[in-house]
Length: 552
Image 1 (cartoon, rainbow, N blue to C red):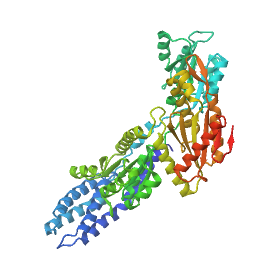
Image 2: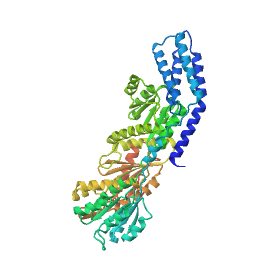
Image 3: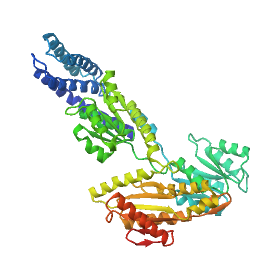
Image 4: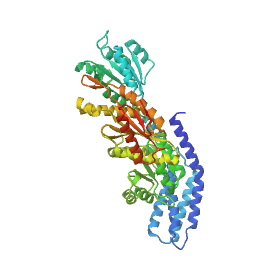
């Protein structure tokens, strides 16, 4: 069963559950209405009735009862008018409400059920992108090919080398998900690489991405390379930093972490429906049916966006938004109200107290996914300007220290290990002085890429300042952290950097602190910094643990 079929099956189960619950929902409506006093106004009873009708108007159409949803919306608008007056109902007004409730029952009995919306399945399927770490190098210079393979392997790529065009073309008959590094000039044909790629690309719906390598840069050759599917053209000798950057863009080496959405809605089935739609689109979703429990979700789940129903018992959506906006750690989280409320003034009021958007129920799954993901993207873009280093894209100094504080709190709460590493490029001033700051920037970016690619997604990497980096290794003790960072240190020292016609290599030193010895941010950071100083004082290009142990 593929993802689309699973999603449709999940919607069917939710729809069946809603249909089974519908008779009891209508009975509960009548019970609340029967409690409403005839000779006075009961605000609490009225609000309960209004909230239940509001919920029905938003959920019925979603689960395939459009006529019932329309009737509930009509009753909701009628109740809203009565609620504004806040006085005992006349016999005529009571009869009107009773007739509308009876109409709801009749519509439910007739079961005018249609299929629940499943349009999100299409958008989710189309959003899937398959990336590859596999690289094919096609180069008749075997020494150059091997050197490229070694350099790229340090960045986590699976590299295969072909010295002959026929061997490459035979391999491409069995391979699709690859990126090709293709030399242009071969002994048997000065444009052999271009001609081979034209042959390989023929008949393919999706062209194979290819980066052409050449000692020449004439326009006519570049044009033919583009026509053969070339997405980049690099002159020899190859600048490894630029090449790795281009491969990063093509292969999406680090899989993006799923965006997190918290849904707060007391209507269980409807909340599960929205969770299924967003989950199908690749988002990570949590559901809170009780708004009083939301603070726990905020701390543990750390959502990228919160979907809040407007009308809930004990705490309505606007009150909840006010509470969230008073918490400094969560003041920037986008809040989107999801409600069948059609009163524009109330919608604007909800946005005015801290909401970022207002979506009206019922909403098609595809529209929900589109609205949520676009809002998250805008929020992340704005946040990136505040927390990301502009050169490397890593967390900046403040952000990495904030992340360290959160990870220390988590590690202490769960009794888990944690290590913090400080990294400094050795003799970096000499690089800038000898080759210039643009080359120095490329060295910094090379190390940032290597750290991101060789560490896990749960780890955090930041640029502490200048040529200094910080690494948070989650669930990792000091000894294990030393082994991880020493492997990266070794591989980084073997990378070849290019400045004009000159190749050079650099190394880094690293100091590590373990949470078992240092239990707060300042002490842990100071300990790692002292260990880094010890590593540099002992000769550089080494790792030192804060207790004094070291390795080469």
